[in-house]
Image 1 (cartoon, rainbow, N blue to C red):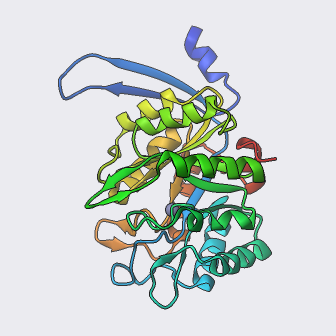
Image 2 (cartoon, protein in one colour):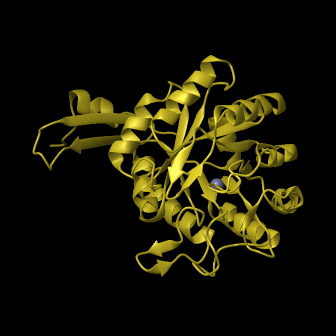
Image 3 (tube, rainbow, N blue to C red):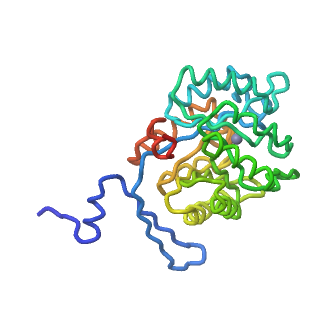
Length: 313
Ligand code: ZN
């Protein structure tokens, strides 16, 4: 006799695309709260944060510094399955982050000549060093499809990463004018509210795309609970992706993937492949999430498919 699922179970098995069911149990206080989520998932967009502005060669010899190294690392990560390349540049002499337009241009030109990747250029500058606002806007002149939009100020260790209303409103207006989509970087829950207010004022155009940054000291922790809450409060029709900082990278990528969101990995956020073992390239970190996604049954979006999902076309 052949066993076939009945009722709700039968309907579940008829979904055309992979369906994920998450059970959240609070084992610690032994309550019986149980949540069932069904997610009809689209293809997975992988973003890679190539170098950021903070990691030094003393921390890892594998961090790309020169424009040539940053571009090469991005091209490799694209080849491994990343469709969005999130780019900072470094001053090759000092190794420090900079908003120098000619360095951005060199990286962007090199990548554009070899790939169809979506470029997300940073407007963060150097978190904590708080560059002049106009300097932070410089990459917009290269017409990327995405720019980062850090949706509020936050204390990071002994520094303040300043993103006051004056800066955010200017940045939002510039992106509207140039037709660039802001990637809304959210470090804590109040920043979602800020984005919603800007949307109501017409400064951010829906559908919004959020990047949840979890595990920064001073921000929300890299836990499933943080991600669940944030993903539930964004407006219907939004897309979201998650970054787990440091040891949170792989757990958050896996959780985000299972919840139907998108993921970011890369050396900007995490320099280790496993405990005590340095990641040797951005491509290595991308390859791992590609393997996991495939095993899980989630297909990887190409850059063109990502454009459709993010409403960039
Ligand atoms: Zn960044």
